[in-house]
Image 1 (tube, rainbow, N blue to C red):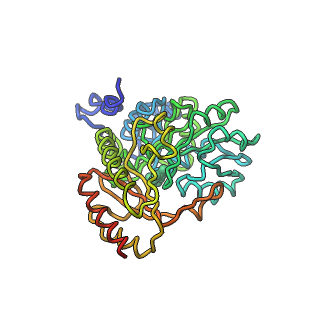
Image 2: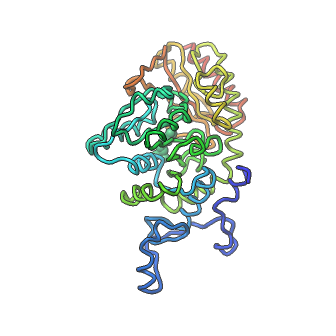
Length: 389
Ligand SMILES: *Cc1c(COP(=O)(O)O)cnc(C)c1O
């Protein structure tokens, strides 16, 4: 089956829902059994596909979502959790114990850095942050107690690409787990498991949900890693709400057409941005002169709607003159919804393995499903305001 067809068909069971196309929202905490013998037999069913024991461990709504995501990722199983950050945490917690060492890229989504430093460290898990472009040089950072290499590409805010096959080959040789945050690419543009990754993480809040109205995360794995992953989620009481799971699966069905439009619009806007006065550099791996372009072309099937712009030196008030009066760009975090967004960022304070140098302010943009002509006209007026300020 081709991927666009999987996107429509996977996890769909009208035969179980009186013919309704979509699996409904099952609002359930207690899930009953008719006899005591059935109740006793259900103990281990929490690990079984299509079996439901207690609301916290899953319902047919979360099961349908997990089945669809696993099919898209080329995985055996998936576990849905309460947010993208919960998915990052569950994947890491499935691997580590006190005394272990993990490797995390310097461009990682910042709350993951915080999780490692502020939460894992007191439990005796040590983190080394590494240059995301290190490739097979990762071998020099491995220790006897290294348990997990975490990856994310393109890097949050700064869009460095990672040589995933080079890193996973080394990890496999040494029996070290790998986890990849696939939120930017989604399984439609990149399949981590096909590149040797063990845990594929998606902040489903973003493109899966697609409408900026729910928090959701999913992690996909091969069968042998399912139990530790599910345990990490269950022991921490980490599961999605019924409505959120429903919105994630509903959004997934149209993710293909949305991503195609996000990608097309973003290529137009980034090409335009790259030619504007006052712009130092556009960070988007789909652009041919981006340092990550060769890896992106080799490994990815497309690009999504998130990129950053490094500007020449401008004062804060000039940035505000640009951003505050944009008509079509809302100011806010997150991305993956149908709308365009903008947010300033400065990673220089967070980095520990690499130095972030920018001549001026940096802005991250998400390009929505608007007509790109309107977005470019809006940005053009904004740049004029910034240069005049
Ligand atoms: C947003 C995001 C997350 C966290 O997702 P939430 O649903 O907001 O918790 C994790 N990783 C990446 C790369 C993200 O962009």
